[in-house]
Image (cartoon, rainbow, N blue to C red; front, side, top):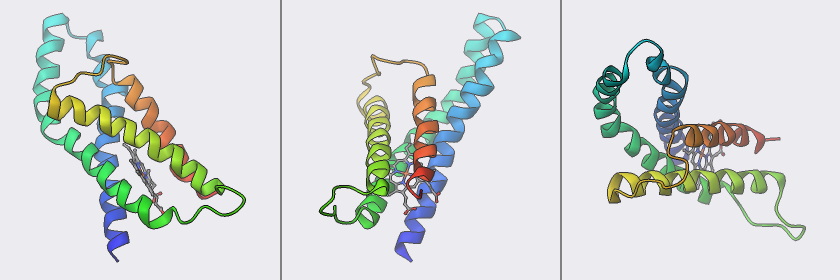
Length: 138
Ligand code: HEM
């Protein structure tokens, strides 16, 4: 029951976090095509001021709930090494933790990522993580 609840929280938080990245990459980045430089800044800020209040926390909840799920399903490593499930889950967890660390540093400590400043990098990682999240069941 608790697992199902945390799993649902995990899915909702990754939808909010990943959803914003999809919208940003697919649609908001296109504002440049119709607005000029200052208008883009104003329009983007009008959206980002609300994004900053929600999306970084959704990422933190995704990581915290992911860590809980991980402890419940990873299981013991057998004598022949990790199963495909454990391997795929480890890579997925590593990428998720990396995103979480990056986002938390930025939000709580004001440390801006010096590498990959655009949202294309987290977007790409989220796409890979979503594929891996399904690959763990293969
Ligand atoms: C932004 C980062 C993350 C994204 C986008 C993400 C995405 C997902 C998705 C799409 C699922 C599949 C849900 C389903 O099909 O029911 C999932 C499940 C899972 N995630 Fe994450 N996740 C993230 C971070 C993490 C982290 C950091 C961990 C662990 C440290 C983690 C551990 C898990 C586990 C253990 C499951 C599967 C549980 C199961 O179905 O048995 N996730 N995640």
